[in-house]
Amino acid sequence: MASMPDDKIDYSDIPPLTDGFWKHAVRNPFYRPVKLQLTVRLDADVVAWLREQGKGYQTRINALLRAAMVDDVTG
Figure 1 (spheres, helix red, strand yellow):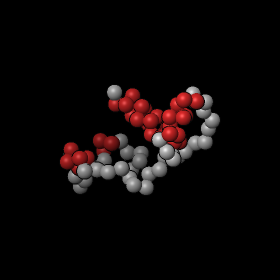
Figure 2: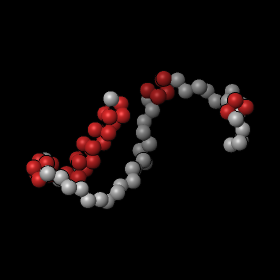
Figure 3: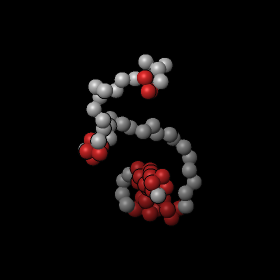
Figure 4: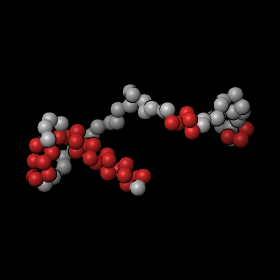
């Protein structure tokens, strides 16, 4: 089947995915992105600001970078 062209595959027994399906869809709860350990140089005041907000500053760095990435993709 992998070698068949899409127009030769019978999809008649598969219901179409509607907007309603995607409205209630959730991300796989078991999905965990692969983490890479690396060295990054950041301004001291930026690191101080992140650490002032409590435990988990590296997670906050990741969240800030991910938000910027998503905004860039959707922006």
